[in-house]
Amino acid sequence: MMSEFTQAFAAAGRLIATADADLFEIVALSLRVSLTAVAIAAVVGFPLGAALALLRFPGRRALTILLSALMGLPPVVVGLVVYLMLSRGGPLGVLGLLYTPAAMIIAQVVLVTPIVAALTRQVVEDLWYLYEAQLRSLGCSPRRAIATMLWETRYSLVTIFLAGFGRAGAEVGAVMIVGGNIDHVTRVMTTAIALETSRGELALALGLGLILLVLALVVNGAAFVCRDLSAGPSRQGNALP
Amino acid sequence: MKSGILPCHVEGVSFSVEKRRLIKNVSLSLDSGPLSVILGPNGAGKSLLLRLLHGLIVPQEGRVVWQGGTYDSRTGPHTRQAMVFQRPVMLRTTAIANVDYALRLAAVPSREREERCRTALERTGLSELAKLQARVLSIGQQQRLALARAWALEPEVLFLDEPTASLDPAAARNVEAVISAMHAAGTKIVMTTHDLNQARRLADEILFLHRGRLVECRPAKDFFEAPQSTEAKAFLSGDLVW
Image 1 (tube, rainbow over the protein chains, first blue to last red):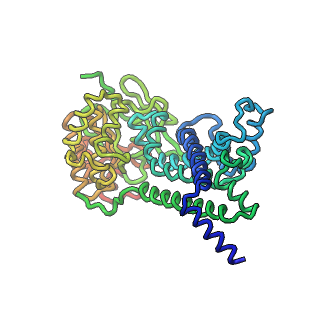
Image 2: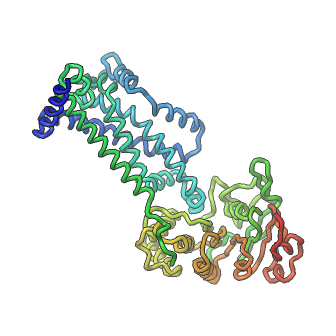
Image 3: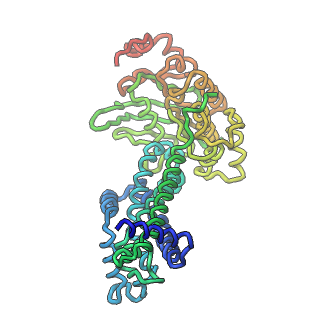
């Protein structure tokens, strides 16, 4: 049993070291799908979150609560809903997107946008508390304030982007359902790991698992650096004139 | 001279938070000329009154009338007013870009902006720090930058809310010098302070506020030499019980 385990590790190492084509095709697709999804989620979610924090309109509270609730969406449910939308009988069936990378991107956008928007709202609202009087005094309209506050929270937004990327890259349920885990077409790291493990092909599964782990480490490390940056230069260390 | 927004008439203004009346039926007039200081102990309602005057908040009773109309939270503060707060709020960018941001909000054409930014920083002694990140400046420098930002807007009226309360004496003197210079240049200054010495140094006119009421409103000299109300007498002798 133990030797099987170490053998799998060795095989995984070989796959990575020799830049195995299948392995890297899967990694590349995973990155492409998740990065595209998070980029779209950010384009929608950053302004949406900031607008929720800054604008006063009827239904704002309800929308805020809904968004928070959507943060916890189970990926399989998202997969199911997107599947129904994209399947031949569904409202978007004519697009023929089911079992394509595009379908996987759509599912991850649905999954990640509420997370990005809700976290953005929180970050912007916290900072707005300090900025509001000054910006209103300068004649900053709420719309203008959205752009200003997104710029002011930019380091936090990078962290949010990375959190969204972590969520998108790690989920398996949604992409499995709408992508179908088709070899060379829609196979990404998480679905491949699930499949290879169930087939007993531990080497590929482990190799992918290792890469996924390293990616998670890199992403979290980057998020950590961003948090440091967002804390800004220390004022305490600065001498008075 | 462009048509001004002064005088300002405050008519029976009251403001409550959760049924506690924090500003009680205040009426006063502000006109160009004297440097007006709203004086009073902590919690007297000085900052609140300043925000009501500036139009950041709207009174539940009474009104603030500027020449040409009233302004409320919908229209926002008048473009010919500016305000400097106790703690400067600076954007995460360079010192000069902070000034430029205010001018862009005020729709000042770009040709004019550069010149006005530079002048404002010169006047406040910050020219050499123009390209530094605003947030690495000391609090005293940031407060002067806030004044530069306000000055660049060339307001007719400048409100200052305890502008030196967070500063050490040297930085406070620097800020006071800028305030005096702006006053000398013709800007109407309305500032709050709880610092008697500062009020003595700067004020031409004292509006003494106590527990949300405007107790006295007189030339500074008269106020300090012969306060009329018992509250003002107690405050000046240092034993006003809040």
